[in-house]
Amino acid sequence: MKVDKEVLLKQHFWILLVLVVVLPLVCLLILWTSASAKVEDAEKTVKVVEQKLINITSPKNDKFVKVVDEKDKKVDAQKTKIWEAAWKEQADMFTWPESLEGADKLKEMYFGDQMPVDWRLDFDKKKPYQAQYDANIEIVLPVKDPTTGQVQFQGGPEAVVPVSFKGEFAQRPPDADELWFLQEDLAIQRELLRIIKDTNDMIATFRKVPGAVKPDKSKGEIDHQVFANSEFKLDLALAEQKGTKVFRCMLTNISNRRQALSYIPFLVSIKGLQDFQIFYADGEPLAPNASVAVKHKDKETEKDWVLQTQSGNLQPGEVLQSVMQVYDWRTAPIKRIDKVVMGISSSRTAGPLLPPLFEKTAEPAPVLGGGDAGGAQGNQAEMGRMMGKMMGERMGGFGGGGGGGSADKTKNGLEKKRYLSVSKQVRRMPVALAIVMDQAHIQDFLTVAANSKLRIQTTQAYWQRFHDDIKPTFKDEGKPQEGKPGEAPGKTSPSSAGRGGMAGKGAMMDRPGMASPGGNVSAMMGAMQRRMQMGMGMGMRGMGMEGGPGGFPRGGMPRTMTMPAGPAYSPQAAPDTIEPEEESSLVHLAFYGIASLYERYPPKKEGSEVATPNP
Image (tube, rainbow, N blue to C red; front, side, top):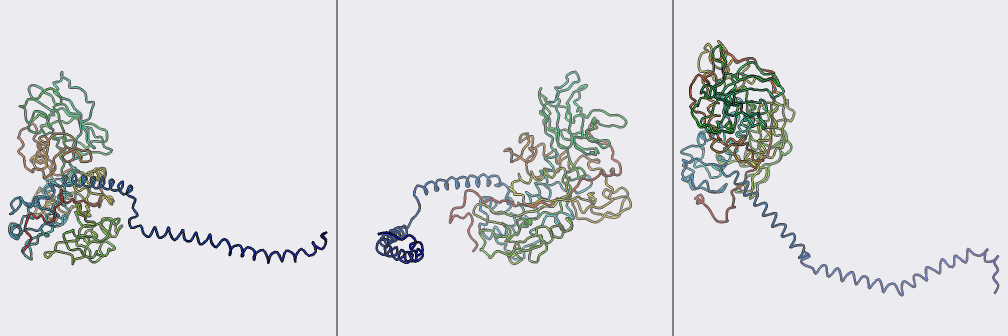
């Protein structure tokens, strides 16, 4: 049949329209008759798989679970190992007075354990808190008079270091938790003050510089060593001339500023001699990189310093063991403590504080804003005002954020909410320090703080220039007297609390250590005596070595030690007043951190108690 192409072209629209209508109907017919069966089969398969998944009650893969369990065991073992090591380091930090009834058992108890009533009554009767508090204050060698002490307390110790308990308990007998809180406060304050002491001791301790020249036998030298700290280098030779042992010293200023030389004492440990030897450096201020021979000035003559101890068995070799500079209130790197506070956070870590685990769990206190916000602890408000003044209100007060409210206290008013976090292993308490110190040694202070027994995590530190007068004033004990230490003739000194009060401008003071080489020198000599017994060497926990900074043992130094008299080292008469101070490089430093207080290890077994519970 012949197709008419012209007709096909003319009618192609209608032809295509018929196909558009018919083809979809054909496709639908095919789907209805064949594809529906395949869809139903796929739906059945999905439902079967879904039901199988629903029926699985334990979806964990045993192989994976075993691997994760092994990792968990290793993590727990490492956590326990760290806990044990941390506790051993802090084991002697938390102490009880030996005179207390049950003191031997208290040492073995866990934080928060209950105590018999008679133990608590004995604490109330003997009142050992004040003696422990006073011993803590003595750690930093506080300034007590113009010739004794290194560190001042602004306004007195009790204005700087909060007193947790004073007088008598209003409600007796005190609860066990109150006694635990008191001893914890004392322990933390002790370690915070020890940071101040250790910083000064570390900077004062000279390290032995390798490469010293060999002793010159023709000059009678027994040993020749070079020692240095951050400020001075001491070229020291021990020699014998005409049967007398002497020091030959060359002192160099290795700092970048002038250093005053006003009878600065140096203690030397010599192998074979039990007593520590002392000599003084005196003269005009020493410019950077300048050197001066250290001589003993006797009237119009100068001669080498003679050893106080001439009898001793000095074996050949290195007999000059160590050198330590003795600080006073003028030369100490940390000169004043303005505040020591616990339970107060930096602005970075501000948040509600928690009670210990043995206390009944309470609702967290709301986060407070601003340093003087209502409901914050009294110390926090006081610190806020002080630091606001110090820093020009830059941060709205010391801490910036809050702790527990006044309702969260024991029956005798001790704060319960004091920790940022608590667990079975550790309690983390925020702490803060405000000090006046030499700007050049800020990093030394931060290093000692990080290496303290409290294992402090530094959260914030800031400082500004100190523009006030750092000279201490002392309590006026009567009418002004001519030449009375601590005040200018005919001028009454401002009243201040005891050991190193508020700095008073214009106070004219005798040179510390001039009248009698006691006080600081005696304390440092006692420290070096114990250091010799324990072993020499620089010591920092981060270096894996024992002892405190510079190898000196931790703890308060003895304040008295008999020093042999003799013209070889007795200082010459001091002038009536000290020289004008050099341009100050002092700063106010505000330091915040989080102290970690580890629970006793091994952990307490459930049901085991050293003491019987309260009736």
